Image (cartoon, rainbow, N blue to C red; front, side):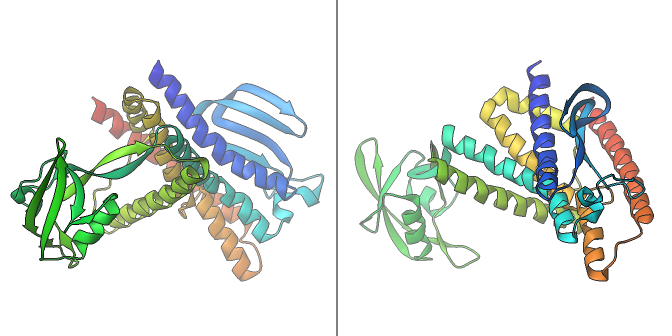
Length: 339
């Protein structure tokens, strides 16, 4: 039951934030919004508020914002509030706002983690040794706290890293504190592929709670960094340099189950990672996704006239059908993996 409610929470957050991006920007540029729906299929709950109806639907695998003028054949009473009457820039902003809200959600979740659980910060205490490297051969051990390099006091991991890196292939004296006793070790640094000195130690990490602005800054930084890593991995998959591992809803629920067992903050980490994935996926130029709609708007901006709406809708319709088929195949594969 915990996994069920956690899945509802995660899927709900991803969908609601994504659709809120479209919704808020549409309202901001003066587009009339008929419907804000979380999920697809039959309605479970419908709440009309002003000119917009807010719906909760049966299948929580997505959502949509239905705006005036999105259908080219639709007759809109107030043409000035129609999507198709807005500038290319305004329409592109409305479309892009959904994925961008997923990146915002990821940064927000990471900020909460760094504020209340803490940010992993390296200390001067050795956490792990690399086998058969200078530190291990010299006699250093996990739990030793490095207090000086070449008799120069160090209080931060960055200082240790800087001093070691700047002495490739050279002798070093490392002073550590072990069970209250100062011990000196002499060693010669190794040289890595970049020509930097290495001795083969990893720091022990501590979780330190950050202030609001520091946590937000780190949240944004990590969102950008994770996005870059995902894009790099996608590039390797396309080039055949990495296995094409894709998970669907079943795989996600399985990961949510694991995160629930580990604790609330692990669940938030997973939600942040999934939100980044959703934002990037929606920006890909795949028919029926936001990226494809942005591509059509870019073509309109370059040509000075829109692509034939009937042809564009056909492309999105076919793309949506193929996406559903892909989800079914991936889900089938995930179920087989579980069995």
